[in-house]
Structure formats: C-alpha cells, structure tokens
Length: 205
Image 1 (tube, rainbow, N blue to C red):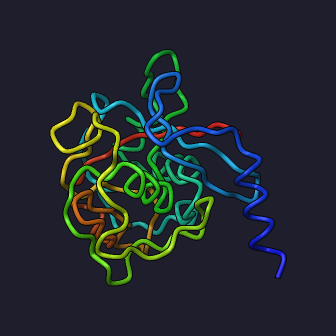
Image 2 (cartoon, rainbow, N blue to C red; image 1 turned 45 degrees about the horizontal axis):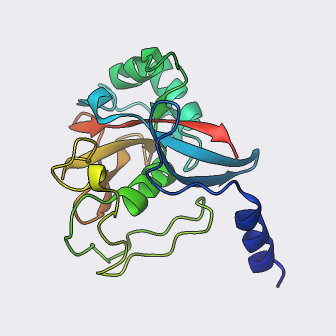
C-alpha cells in the first residue's frame, strides 16, 4: 500500500529537469529506476547515430538480458563480437566516453518523451515500462503524443528517424528487442538484421 507514495516521494526528490533539456553533450530523456538507484538518461546527439546488426551469430548472451542496464548489456554484446556494441563503447562525444546502447526500457523512455511524429501509437502490448520513474503504462492511441521539443519533432535536427532502433536487450539467443519511433511498436527481430542505434549514457540522479 505504501509503494505509490514511495514512488511519488522519489520523483519529487529528483532534480527538476525537463525532457529534451540540453545537458553536457546530449539531451535529458527521463529517469530509470535500478537496484543501484535512480539514474537520469542522456540521449546522444543525432549526429552520432549509426546502423548495424546486433550480432552476427545466434549466440545466447546471459549478460545482455537486462531491461534497465544498457551499459552491462552493451559490454556483453561487445565481448561476444558485436560491432555496434564495440562502436558504442569506443564512441567519444564532447570528451565523454561512457556511451552505450540503450536497454529495452531505456529505449522506451526515449520514445515516450521524444516521439518525433503525430502518428497514433500501436497500443497492442506496447509501452509498459516497469523500470522508468514514474512507471510507464501501456500506450493509448494518443499517448504518448508528439514531443513538444521542436528539435526532436519530425524534420528537426535531433529527431529520431521513423524507423526501428535496436535496444541492447536480448529476447532469446536468436532475437533482440527493438522499438519503432513512429508509432511506438515494440518487438524483437533476428540479431542479423540491420537497425539504427542512438547511444545514451546515464548519470546518478
């Protein structure tokens, strides 16, 4: 019975940041709740986006199953030979080198706060995010709406493409989670498919 109040207290205690606020290098995208505490998520600039396959082999990666720890997932992917993970870990932007591929719930957070289009959302089993703070509930057709941050709206310089983006979360040895940035579809696909990647980093809230 005390959990909702506890969550409200946590949210109220956080430093007030508006979604889309410019940070050191990237942009604030929301908060993720983990066993190690609450972290703010910073989305990298659009210019650092790239495409690639998740992994060239159908290898089971127990270390890449986290829904909230994209950094750990990305390390596991890189150790298994993932080129996109290696590129993520080698990326330096504005002197920062702690970028990684967002986990499933971190990637959902980016869509929820920075949706580029006015399209209706896919509502069937999409949008639930137990890791976000506050907790994210399944999408409705209208919510989340297009972001109010102009540079992230479709056609803007920081806008996500209306395409599928990889998360770093494995679903099974054969497939990994991804998110579509037009209508918010969440699904998994073969690791050998090519998808877009938007890097993130996190900071202690």
